[in-house]
Image 1: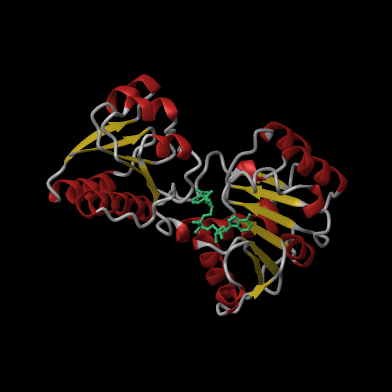
Image 2 (image 1 turned 90 degrees about the horizontal axis):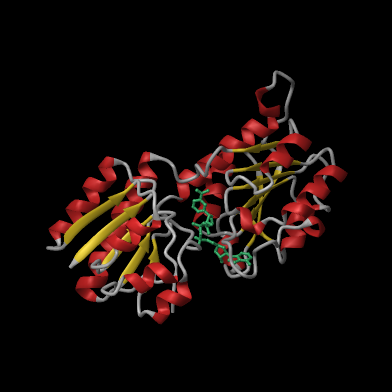
Length: 306
Ligand code: NAD
């Protein structure tokens, strides 16, 4: 069995060593395609692969068509919107992610961004504190739960809304579970986004939702740019000079945000939430273990296509 690691942006060497140990220890062969610059290289490399580990790499219908021997794709990370799930199902390919492996890294970045924002991007002027502020966690999954844990240390008042997580699961963490996204945004000074990009959530963070946030509101996005209705966010920020937007996922209209909202808009230069040595190693090794479990024992835990 051949396991391909196909990463345009490679894993750290220590993560590759860990993946190699898992894969070869199970008696499989490991192949590496790193820093590829052309889709043709990926199409060629997948031809005889039985399993693929990817990061943000695009696995679309064309790649799946070229990968005749493929049984499983594991996205080392949480979001799997870079994989065409319907095409994978049509080709009989199992798709998994590695939930939870980078959640602490993303949650820590939320607070890096928040402290930067409330201290006015370190411009020398007097800012505000996080202690006592109402923080809304929009989606209480792996990242959301880590955000709650860290926020307690800052002395914040915590609220969360999740469309699928039962309220008692949220409340046992000392977080107030609210009934709707609308309620969350009305109550909270700061909202941190952790919803996945799905047909339902794309463009869902819009003016209607944001306009009722209290004065001095901050929206922090470490989820996906697609969940934001950018035109309406721009409109809202024009109407509300008190509103700040900070994000780990650069908007398509980054130039416009930068030009219009100096001092209350910030984006990391590239998605950095999961860019830590620890997250890199954890997610890569988890992906390798999941592949071994699937190929040896048919274990489908963490399968995301049905
Ligand atoms: P997760 O799957 O553990 O949690 C997602 C949560 O969203 C679940 O609890 C689910 O019930 C909830 N949810 C789904 N649809 C919803 C909806 N319509 N309304 C409200 N809640 C909804 O995922 P996670 O590990 O917490 O990651 C969350 C997202 O963060 C990922 O989907 C990914 O897009 C993004 N992410 C970004 C980075 C980064 O580098 N910035 C890294 C990891 C994850």
